[in-house]
Length: 374
Image 1 (cartoon, rainbow, N blue to C red):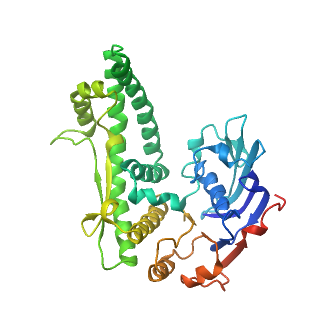
Image 2: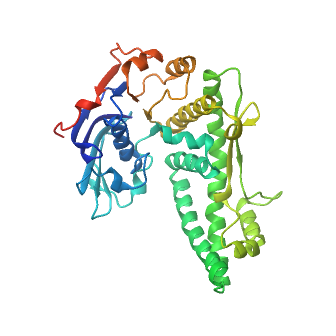
Image 3: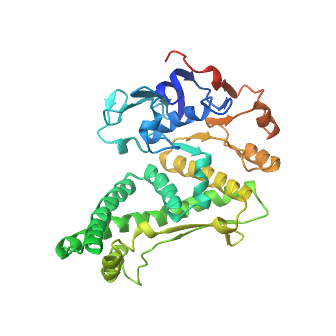
C-alpha cells in the first residue's frame, strides 16, 4: 500500500497544503511546531478515522476556523486505488468518503489502509496500564478480522449496559432487573468468548513475528509476550460457558462494587525481557527497542492477513536510543515499503545511520509546506 498524495485544509497548523510522496522513504524535517507530525496525523486519520495524538477531533481543526478536510490518494499492491477523504466540523459529525461514496459507519474504514504508526505516545504500550496493551492489540486484531471488531464493539455496548445496572444498584440502591441482567450476561458471554478466543489465536501468530524481529535488534536478551485471560475455562468447558459461570459467580461482588469484575476488559497482555516484566524493570532504551519490535511485528501481521504491505509512520524514531541501536533499527527497516520518518535535524538522522543522499529518499522541509494550494 502506498499513499501517493495528501491534501490538507485547515488541519492543525496548515491552512492549505498539498504533498506528493515518494514510494519508499519520506523524511519530514523541521523545527518543533513546523508541522511534520501533523502530516503523519493526517495520514493516520485516513486509515483509522482519528489522530494518534488526540481523540478530540476539534483539536485537529485549525485555530479560528470551524471546518477541516484531509484527503489522500492510495494505491494498493493489487492495483486497488482508493481516494479517502475525512471531513471535520464543529457543527456536524465527522464523515468519511471512499472514492466519493459516504461510509455509513466509520468502522468500515478499518482494515482498508494497513498502516503502522510508531510515535512517542505509544510508549504506554510497554510502560503503561493493562488497558494500554489491550488497546494496542484490539486496534491490530480489529484490522485483520472484521468479526473481531464487531464482537469487541458488541461486547463493549452490552458491558456498558450491564455496568449501568450494577452502578445504579451500588450507588442509588435501585433494584436490579434480574431478567435483564441475565440477558446481558448471555450477550457478554457470547461476544466476550469470540474476542478471547481470537486474542489467543492472533497472539500466537504475532509472537512468531515479534520474537524474530527482536532477535534481529538485540541478541543478548530474550523477549517474550504472554496473554492472560480473565476467564479461564475448566476442562471440557467452552469459553462462552466459562464466561456464563464466572459472571454468575461474581454477580454479588459486581453488585457491591457497581461494575463487572470479570471478562475481556480485565485480560492481561504481558511483555518480558529475560523473564523480567518490562513494565517494571525495563530501562528507557529497552522500552523503546521492545516497542520498535512490537510495531514492526504489527506490520508483518497486517501484511500476512491483509496481503497488502503496510505504510510505516515513524515519529521521533530515535528518541531514547543510542547510536548502536539506531543503526541496527535503520538496517532492519523493511525493504520495499513506504516509510515516513520525522526529525528536527537532518544531521541527526545521518548520525543515527541514515544515508540521505539516495534515490530512495524523498525529503520535505515542513517549514515550507504551509499555504501550498491543495
